[in-house]
Length: 417
Image 1: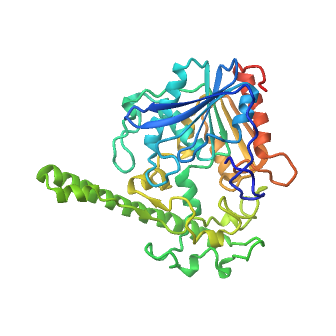
Image 2: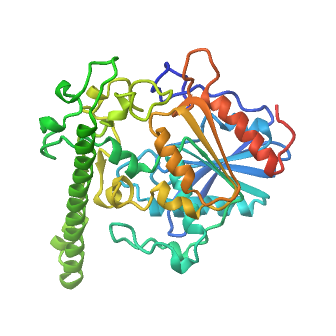
Image 3: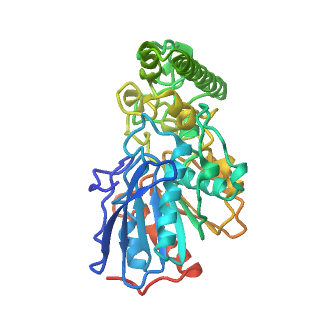
């Protein structure tokens, strides 16, 4: 999210402005409640008493495009990795909550008067999940991951927040994948095998060659969504089968002490999930219409990208699949977590979003438990680019609204230069 923009539409890279000259930056290494090591960068300006926390469960947000704007507005900014940064393979969301807790604890110790998480994209569900769990009595927190691993959340100090900003949040990694996984995969071992009646890129089912918008019938979409559910359920069952084999090998090793059983327990079980860029809404712009351009987050040709190496959840452990990528099993579901978000909340929708569509945003915002809820919509694509060349970027428009919201509720330093 930090390199210069390469164009409009689905571009993931948006230009970042310079930080104020008065910015002081320091790097910190933290230890989580379960002993993992995570790193964060604190950027601050003179007099800052409010700190905005920017995190994403799997991306490096050190150079997020909003950081310079937030600093210029008079807030400090803490950007932090989780233990799974740039690594879809082993991302367990319950562990990521312990990473968030370590960062917020560090900031409390630094003496900031107000801590405000800002969750962009998947960072939104990460913070919704965190705030839901932090607001519970320790004994009421989730005890095990969907794969059966102890979470240790009950033993962790999980500091609260003084507000939260959700910027273009999507419904959660699993819910997102549930909407874009290709249900026409006929054989999980074959990237090309397809059930023709469910193929979203077959003209017989309503697909049109880009850049023309496709047109799917309600009947096809109903069958398609049901088949997506069924495919994820099958993958869930396979993941649990693999975890059961590993558990059996661990139990055998405890009894026998045999190296062969230990090897069975340690041998990696990796799921390969083919074709995960096939949400009909990315090529049929009449579905849940918005300002979004044709195409998905990954580019303007989902019909080709779907068959390539890029996509959500393509390689993952069974534990990470169930915790993060399964829209049926993951706890990291924004709508599920949202009632537990009761601190002052700002929800910023980007009208050209290719990951959170208008219907998704309505459901997410409506589910929030905050009495002080501000919802705004600004023109922009998912990563904060401009919808139309020459107009302000979504990041610029969102930063201005977020800065005003922060100033209305928290003490900010004089504008930094």
